[in-house]
Amino acid sequence: MCGIVGYVGSRKALPILINGLKRLEYRGYDSAGLALLQDDGLLISKSVGKIKHLEDALGDRSNSQASHGIAHTRWATHGEPNYVNAHPHTDNNCEIALVHNGIIENYRTLREYLVRQGYIIKTDTDTEILAHLIHFSYQGDLVEAVRGALTQVEGAYGIAVVSSLHPDLIVAARKGSPLVIGQGVDENFVASDVSAMLEHTNRVVYLDDDEIAAVTPNTFEITHIDRTRRDPQVEEISWTLDMIEKEGFDHFMLKEIHEQPTTIRNAIRGRLNFEEGIARLNGLNLQYDELRTISRIIITACGTSWHSALIGKYLIEEIARVPVEVEYASEFRYRSPIVDSQTVLFAISQSGETADTLAAMREAKKHGATVLGIVNAVGSTIARESHGGVYIHAGPEIGVASTKAFTSQVMVLTLIANLLGRMRNWSVAQGREMIEAVEAIPAQIESILANEDAIKAIADAYHQATNFLYLGRGINFPVALEGALKLKEISYIHAEGYPAAEMKHGPIALIDENMPVVVIALKDPVYDKVMSNIAEVRARNGRVIAIATEGDTEIADRVNEVIYIPHTHRLLTPCLAVIPLQLLSYHIAVMRDCSVDQPRNLAKSVTVE
Ligand code: F6R
Image (cartoon, rainbow, N blue to C red; front, top):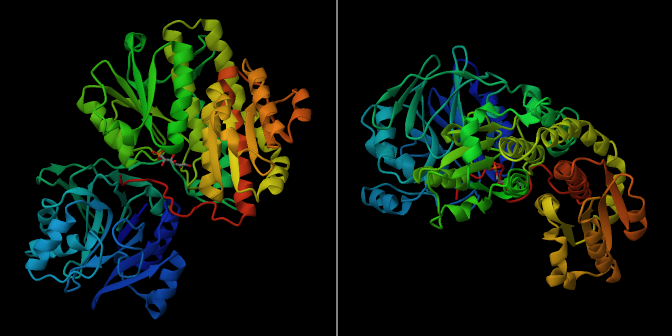
């Protein structure tokens, strides 16, 4: 979603801001803008569309010597994506400029109030109101003016504010929308995401909700909105620049698909005890006694992370025999869920900032649940607000369509299920069998990736289809959902995922020679049933692309295309079965000339409801 970057120091701010915005492009946006503090006042430039347009719009002004400024990529919520609505927004005297992520919920009331005070409102946005409100509260101290304005605001915000009356100062504030300060030498940064500043510093301070930071080239002072001060702890993040670059791949999504052997190794490193057949997950902050007595688990998430939650349910219920409910975070938070101090809730999120997941987690906490995060982004809000949890260590995921985060989430859920199972009914031998199979997964993913050309050829044969059906059973039903989601997100082909046996209760009506059906048909206890489902599709001239287990020679004659994956432990198949589906979606999208890394209308981190 929207992105913020700010710089205050002694270097030229413009290239730093533009590069920072480019690093944030992956989050999804429709317009961009910046404000630079020049000797003669604020220079504001905006454009609709890509950052390149913003650079073009700057023209002669691109050699600005300003060493202080803020910039923004906007993903429209209030008001269409056009020049006027793009950020920054200013007060009527053009002395204060502001960029904002989030939504000001009471902006209509504030707008009416400000109009009565004589302010002229120029845009359809909720953000402009804030610029006027800060001006209205201003009495010589910008930090106090921001504080005064924010006390009147309901909603979510991450903001960065500059003023021509205060050279060398950025005021940043957050509530519900992430913001991080980067510490440099004689320079400091503000951003909504560390990747915007990673080439300059890895020393960061995350702002908490209701905090305001006054950032100058050599200092940053953080106060709560109620004026109490916090001594900021600077953290060093381990992400490196190459992690956020394409490194020779055509797209981030392809790079991330190919990173999965490494990211799975990172997710399991130091966490496997072969002798005891048990996973070590100290971050859960739960003693063995507590793990033994968990009687009910809820897993909440959105999108792809929700699909991994569904797989987590299969794993935990089968291995540990603990009942698990999986719920969309957006539904959970509004339906008065039954949660108490005996409930353990896992919140799964790649970004750690998804608004619905965060709200669901807070709701559960309010009712006394133990809340654990399964998160990728270190230091993100969900990670920090959880009682404990497990980082998936997938590294930055830049492609909007999630790939490597999914497999790492599934792997971490596998380890959690193993741990709970070994605390209860699973024997050492059962545990060992799984742990050994886990260790083999990265090399098995490598062997699937080596078959990419064959998958690309299948993509070539089917990329003009207008509908796809994905079928799977048991633990691979959520993989069918994930395969369908990947395809529709990046290629805009309509695709549905279904439990294979449910097909005959409705979707079978859609099947004809134009309908490719992707079926996960692995050698497992439901193999014969899935083969019957395949026969039903073929009898209606449907074209079947099967994901099958290596060595299954009989399937080739019964489907149109087959992609083999190596044999593994029955409960570990999702991590392998999803890889060809990711590659299939990717190549279909490329062949259809789609914007793979930044699909239309999508945002990487959904920080609004
Ligand atoms: C799909 C995708 C989204 C996210 C969802 C949750 O490819 O990326 O469906 O999975 O928006 O995001 P996180 O995991 O960051 O909470």
